[in-house]
Each structure stands twice: as C-alpha cells, then as structure tokens.
Length: 226
Image 1 (cartoon, rainbow, N blue to C red):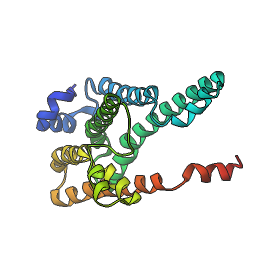
Image 2 (image 1 turned 120 degrees about the vertical axis):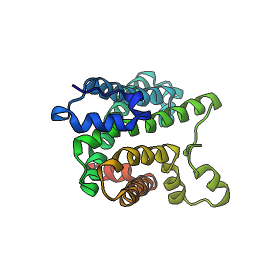
Image 3 (image 1 turned 90 degrees about the vertical axis):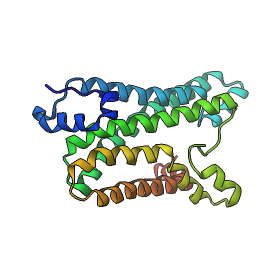
Image 4 (image 1 turned 135 degrees about the vertical axis):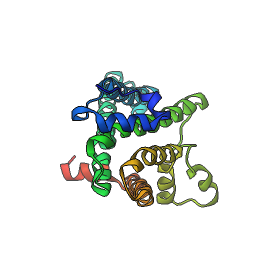
C-alpha cells in the first residue's frame, strides 16, 4: 500500500500524484491519521478562539450584572456553538468545495479530497496566527492583517467591499497554488483549471461578505418567533 506523507508530499507533489493514481480503492497508508489530525487541528482552533473570547463580547454584560450562572451557561453554549462551527467549516472545505471542484473539472472526487487537506491546514493556520496576533495586541478587529481589507479601510470604507477583501487572504493564494500544483496534473486544460480555482475563491468570498453584512441571525430569530 502506498503512503500519504503530508509534509514530504507537499514538496514532492509528483510522488503523491503517483501514489494516488496507483493506490487500490484510493487507500493510502497514513491518510486517515492525517485526516483526523487536520480535523482535530480545526476544532482546536475554534475552541481556542472561543476561550480567548472572540465573538462573545455580548455575554460580558451578564457577568457585569452579577449573573454568573447565566454567564457560565451562555459561555458553555457559545463553546458548543464554536465546536459545531468548526465541524461545519471542515465539512464545507473537505466535502462541499471538493465536490464543487469535481463538478467543474471532472477530476476524481477522492483524489481532490486528499489535496484539500493541505488547503484546510493552511487556511486554519492563518486564522490561528490572526487570533494569536490579536491576543498579543490585546484586542481584535473585524479584518485580518493577512488581507487587503485593513489597508482599504483607510482609503475607502464600504462594508461589503471590505468583508469581500477580508476573505481573499494569503491563505487563499496558497490554497489556489496548492490546488493548481496537484490538480493540473489531472487535466488537459491547466489554464482553465486555474481560472476555475480563482473563481471559486471569489464566489466564496462574495457569499461570506454578503452573509457578514446581512442581519441573518435577526431574520432567523424572526422566523422562529424568538
């Protein structure tokens, strides 16, 4: 059985391509271990971010008002929500985006999933570095320093544009680069592949930016009658 060596194959993509193409039933020794490690790393990031207090500022009022028990319960629910968000994040990147790439390129779905682990790792790593920088600075902002959004905010402030740029980060470039390096070996139209990979990043950034400026939670609460 051929092996899946995460770091080694990142610098030797031809070996991973060879192993994937010649493996039985797409099974690679060590792949499941790496999959679980990346999944665990993703959940750990979301837990760390929650512990640090990102997106939990609204709960501080409970503690200030002396409602310690309610605050503890709210933080517990927030932690559970963060874990679920981490699971959803992994599912979207590992299954949904992979399937989207498969539909656009006709490259084998199982082959793409093995490449997506690299993308997930670097995207989460960038998010972790952002939280670490915020923790050192002692405050957080809506925008990551790994995007053009903070610079654009000084020149022209438009909510949708800034949230859109905030999704196109260094990790986005790394993701497209990794996907192209590997997937271009399985297509006869590498330029078309590159265009599609970039298009996916732009569409995802547009959707996330739209979600960021719309009062989605307020709408959901209204539909549920809360």
